[in-house]
Length: 454
Image (cartoon, rainbow, N blue to C red; front, top):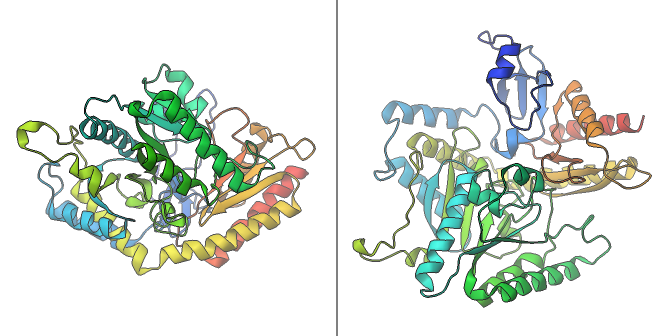
């Protein structure tokens, strides 16, 4: 049932709200969603859609979860705000719960308000850690990877490797380098996965040696690249990266903003390969998108480098007004508890397996699907010209997105990466999705892909 409070979107509204990645000279009005429950969102006219991307891969527990809503509401009534220097009891409680589910000895948490801020903080921690751990050296450089995205703030975007999100704002901050990602479909087509992992390990080591290990602070990457193409690495990749970082005393930072909190069929994607990072950045699914929140966790070793007397000034030189916001932490605590109580990590693994099998069946039936890939409930379909294997024109992909909407499914293509890298459906439904909803999503994708060939 559509909300009675909804009013029609006008031309003035389209001018007032400056939407991202939208050419506002085009006066298309997107569906206005007014309600959500489970995996379904409803627009102002009462039309229902299956959300294939959990908002922006963040509504992990699904829409309308009363336990999350009630927790946030109760905290609002009790204490709506307290400064980060005086954390609320729920902030301490959530930090304890979070540490319990993090891999390895990532035992120390600092809160911010988004994934971008989390990566920004992770980079700052890495640089300050290097300065205090290796006095006299100049360890400030951060090595990122092409096609990865770490956020819209200047440090996080400097570490990112997506051309179209960077060019309008260049020059970026100095001290950021990039190596190639383990992108198997085009970049390393035809190579054995283990050979790709070894080649990229050598590449990282060569960059470190040529720059000088005493100048490099950290290596940062998404365990599975999300918005850069759903790039799942070879099994050997992250253990080899871990070995290289250990060899040179360089921190390894995982950006688990998208992949955390059950998305890939593990609580954190790093668990698939057993290569625990020194620093982990989180966002999105940390609160299932109900209230903005981000966080960074570090190992005991990293944390200990910031211990000293008060006048030593070795504490983290960072504060976020809304970091650890009590309402956000209350929602996040309820969300994480719900993930456990409903068995959503296991459901993501099971439904993800069903989904990927179905996507590969679509690849077999539709020549416009060049590749189907993913892990858990984070999948991608790369669309191509079947005659040339070149990427399908973006305008054609956008028409398929609209066709999905007409058939009751919210579809998204990857955008703002680089030319030839944007003809990919990114598919990440809520972790509460059922087998029947998976099958419905596959059925609509089948119809949409069929329309592409007609």
